[in-house]
Image (cartoon, rainbow, N blue to C red):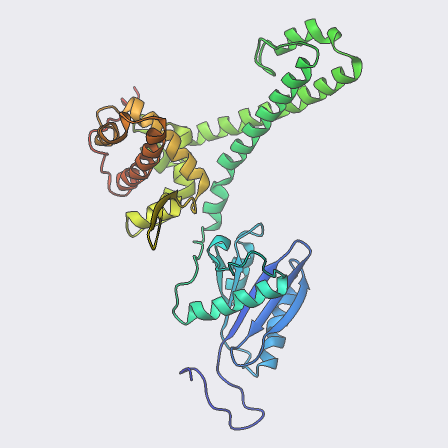
Length: 378
């Protein structure tokens, strides 16, 4: 029996144990599953976002389990579209909450397994109790502060707008090819209006209207991109982001790449060692060694995708612009003489080493061995 439990002396005696609760968050409704570990779970359904109903469910679950009103409550939910507001609200109510990486939750390996919100809620509840019993069974997502979370919006919106710009441009080019019109200028660029004015009569009227509406949406996206990029440049010029400026001093790393790495990883996460850093980026190996089969399955890709993608891009630039660094020399010895596949494998390994080197550079000011800085601005 737990040290926090007391043996009941009568029917009305409360038992000093803890309440465990899991959330299954949906778009329209939430499923709550609660138990103290001694009775079967209590299940509740509330409208999504109804915080008053959540508190009422906690009260009702405590009454059913004969817990005191001030009994501790532990809860958990999977990281998803609701983000961090619920976690912060629960913490403000004195509830000890965990946000769990969905990919780390163990599942039945049968080809066909039953999956319902009720079963998922029960599974989360069991794993939550095991977690508080000391087992290491899942990955808990680290919480950023509201300011750190908000700071990630700029580059994420820029990336989304860049994808929209490409989509609009490709759509316009594809529509024009239907009539053998191939655009020699940048669609939506400086010379686009003049080119379109010369060729618009060669396109049927309905298609012409579609292209012009697509061009209007492209113009809006391009304008929003300019506004966001100008705002980011202004903030950097005013020195509001010292870590970004420090990282961008290294040759081969520009302001955009430095911004993504700082806002996604280095600006708010703290790592005990290089393995934690590589794990947060999904750059750790995943070997398969069972019986007589030994296979390397590649990196886990379980971490921050945006930062991992940026590091791989920067690794290629590092080879070009930092030829004297020890990292580049290591890559050339190990992988440069191999084929394309070996170089692709090597560039991921270089990205992992580069991430560790940049971490040491930002934490301790240690410039990567053999690397050079950009000349100071006049």
